[in-house]
Image (cartoon, rainbow, N blue to C red):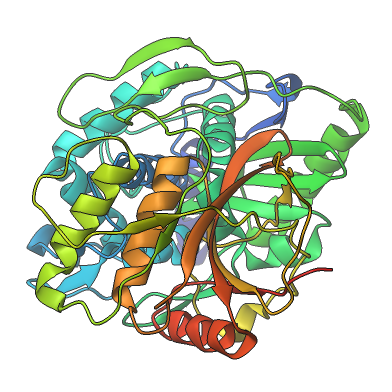
Length: 476
């Protein structure tokens, strides 16, 4: 009799527990988009308010990319770590209170390892506090057309009032690709050096198993379940698929693969990229939406007018470190038609060397260590510019250090790179050429006029500084 009573009580408790667990189970939502046009290819509960978990970090990264592009922050900037950031629970990089670390490492840790402490540190660096950054995130979401999103933190840990939807996360994923294509390769890196540790991608299983997959972000909490925003390209087609509420990594990946297959089946083979509305972003003022641009790229605010054509600069040597900061400021101001704040070393202009279209370099193994965010992949098929003669000069090797969304940013990066290693680039000229990747205008930044040995040496030294580069051999 007693055993029967105990069994009855046990069954009642288990039923109540199961019922509660069922009620608390994360919601499921899915969404598939043609990334080129924004066309909806499939949707289920796409506007339901759900916990996004670490998908939140997509917005954190979007906003810090904007700060870097606007010149308000730098990848080499040392970021102080607060007690708030250091105390975040796993997944984390292991940052210590009071320490300082380069912004590039925080970005890698947040994007690849989904480190909560790194995301919080980024938010505090951008807006001064995580609360202010969360408001900035939400304002930006509204400007993007994310109508069912509200952020309360920079990392996606469960918090009251922190929610998003499958449709909104697809909108954000599309923005990341088209607004910041020069940084997008980060989301497909299987490993990277994050300064104090080598981090592994949380989405590596899907990236290595689904054909054409190249991003973007995973997320998991008990309240959210297993979430994923994925992007893949096949031919001219690019699909973004989103899933909220998976029951496991394997189940989520299998479902997203089905959604991707559906997207590629329904999407047209050829489609023009539909322009995105321009955003004006600044953490110190409200976010506003401007007019539509004429391409799929969103131009950035706070940019000086571009100078027509490309300019080569003869790099000085043996410049003391004390004048490097002034030299950067003066050279950037001169390159963008603005007066230098302080006089610096003079840069001698010479006739521009037009590099021939580059050959596709061999990709380095994923285990080969860290790379800079301004990586040269994907390779641009360069658009030849008008010139008097089509002459290549045997022996003229080039070192490409990045592909950028704007000419002024490419100029800035070339100058900063040269002044970091004056010996390697003594006598080299900087060159910027324009090309396109899937309709996205990009600017290749190269040092030209180097011998084969000098180019190889310079690239090796850049790689040692965690800056990606590629040696380009002359053609002809």
